[in-house]
Image (cartoon, rainbow, N blue to C red; front, side, top):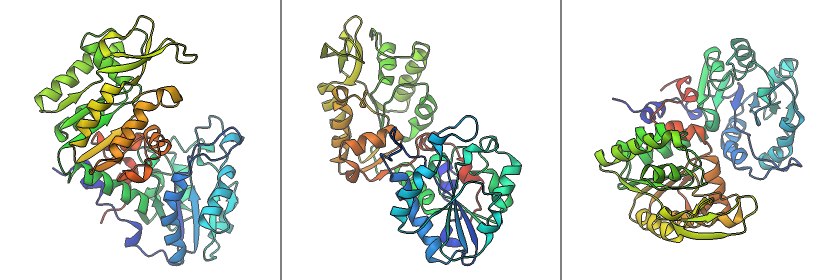
Amino acid sequence: MTSNIAYMSGVKSLKEIDVTGKRVLIRVDFNVPMDNHFNISDDRRIKEALPTINYCIDHNACSITLVSHLGNPKNGYEDSFTLRHIQKRLERLLEKKVEFIDDFEASKAEISTCSLERVFLLENIRFHDGEKKNDAELSKKLADICDVYVNDAFGTSHRKHASTYGIAKYVENSVAGFLMMKEIAAFNKALEKPIRPIALVVGGAKISSKITLLSSVMPKIDKLIIGGAMSNTFLSAQGYDMQASLFEEEFVKTAKKVLEDAKVNGVKVYLPVDAVITDSIEHPVDVRVVPSQDVLEGFHAVDIGPATLKLFSEAIELSNTIIWNGPMGIYEIERFSKGTYKLASAIGDCYAYTIVGGGDTADAVEKAGEKDNFSFISTGGGASLELLEGKILPGFECLQRR
């Protein structure tokens, strides 16, 4: 049976078609983090789109139209989500002028005029009510301004939206950009052609968001390392009183089932043996390290402890493929970030194939200064999770196949 990753690897890529003299619409993912003054704090997603854009420029595309979303606006235009905030950074990185289009329907004639190397950036596509509804009319309108559709937005490839899915039905040529192909190749190497043993490191807040992943990936891995708040649910399943720590009581039985499945599949599970705890997350006064079974009354577990870090690091050191999704604690707060950052260093120091999935984890790796020590850092959070879960992502499903 063909796996989901093998199937998605079979889509046609941009290199397999001729864009010369064609109007090319590229669905990019410029959903980048910004501060309160709209300064971009991480432009990695913009940089990852440049090879696809430059390829179309270098191969004399008639015009290049970039489509993206930014944030999750609720009722049409919102100034905080306008892609005008992205325009200057894009121009600087692309080293060429980018023309901003407020209303692509009103500018259809201008976009359709052939002028080599002309690049347009459309306003936030989610300002259109039909985008998230995968509205056929919006899909047709987008298709009407291009001859070639290129999806290079891996971060939204798990969504059936008009600009990521619906448009492909109405365009003769619909292919994957270089980032999409790079992402699927990285996961293919990690899961379809891995060098064993394989370690899956999972963290974050909730087991509920990763339960499908844990169930589906179990037959493929050798080690399961669990940290973050989700480990509290597993520790609770083993009878530990986690006190005021965040855990999901309704998923305790699920955690027990995951541990049983791991045993059946011969997967070694690693859980925290100690924890950093605090009397208050917002205003900590008393912060200490205790064994996982000895969390003090009223205290919160907020990070893995040093013994756990050593345990996890040893398990990682003896792995040849490592997939990491989810931080080990509340890394956004400096006092509770050591476990996540030191684990990033431990993984970065390994002579293994290392892949990071998830926005928070990628951010933590960047802040830990270990970005260059990882084999691959995915641009997709939800998309990488669904890929690991064994799903075929809609953004690939709608494209032409070789």
